[in-house]
Length: 356
Image 1 (tube, rainbow, N blue to C red):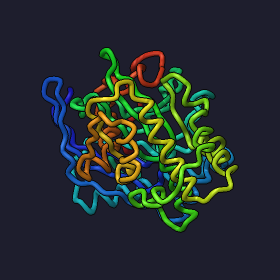
Image 2: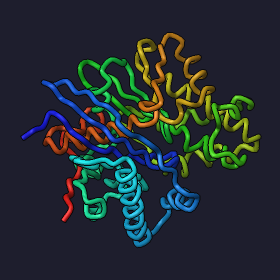
Image 3: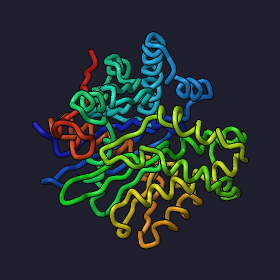
């Protein structure tokens, strides 16, 4: 029997490595209309050892990855259990967890999100819905982005929904079909250079704003093959490591100039990605705090109304949507759109694990 109310926790860890996002959410459905309330939410930062491990895991061997998966599952379980205890959360229907992406190679039929092992359910003593990407890749899809169905269901009043995190991605309706795709790297690159200057990130974009655009680098980045490809398309950290950073590093210019050039590159690619240059654009994710990046996006999209929501939605929108994906899986309903991922068909993805 399908419920009208769901009491769940959404868990998300993004490529920007700022930590684990947790959101305790109440979903309600009446007819076909969904709404939600975020009851509790917080981000638990990774310690420096975990940040370094997750940054370098793309180069791990199979045996090292299996060990890492076990250790990360334990870490995630401990973070979730602590969140439940501290906030005195009871009567949960499920924990809905994305895990953390280490490898994403849909062109090779492969994607790996660690932290999605069956023992998670035993460790947290809750029903767990997780591992949402693998099935889509098996069905010929990109396994990403998965958020757009949540954009359609929970945020229908916006013409575009964009996330600025480790990467930028966008979703929108086109002729009654949801379209979505990754646009470019964002914080995976900007944080890399901010770290070299001794900062965790570029606060409000102040470092980038102090630099100058290198036109040759700017043009080289804009001419990358990925930007000429048609959607569906998605990005993983491999693209940053193997393609983007080597290009930027080949230029012997100040780090501030690298960051300024890359920020302009991101803003231009976002502008080029939107088919209509007007309407309402909802921006969420950590990059929404980068005032200079937002200013440059607005410069390239002068007729767009940019909406940056309150902190809870801004920071926890992806956790909310992965919670929704878990609820849709529990209901046996479609939670991945083939129009977005390129899979053979729409489908209900994810694994459901119950504690022993």
